[in-house]
Length: 119
Image 1 (cartoon, helix red, strand yellow):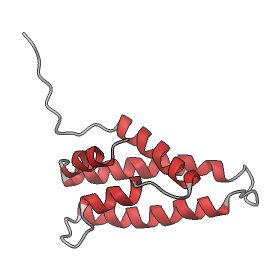
Image 2 (image 1 turned 60 degrees about the vertical axis):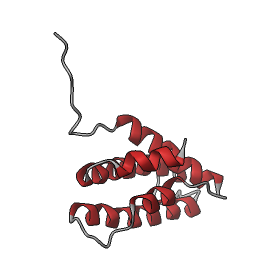
Image 3 (image 1 turned 180 degrees about the vertical axis):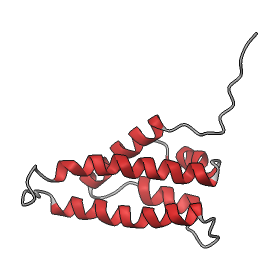
Image 4 (image 1 turned 120 degrees about the vertical axis):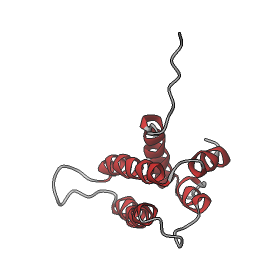
């Protein structure tokens, strides 16, 4: 994954599409977090990474809110993408994020996509 090209892609999206992509990422990240616990409420076997996902979710839900409100004080696009996609010392956390981001970006379609129809 090329961080700079991901940043450039994100920068070019409309605000609503940035929010949609981050929301889709959060959905996929929650799916990844399911690997940190078992079926019972007492069966958390990777609390550190479950906490990591929770903290990242906390930060990104605020960014989504700021995008939708068009707040000028929101973090810059490159800061958000670097927070997500920069290499991490914790390779398990990095894998959680990369897996979720990969599925999110693969399933994402911008609403303003123009479709050209041939004759």
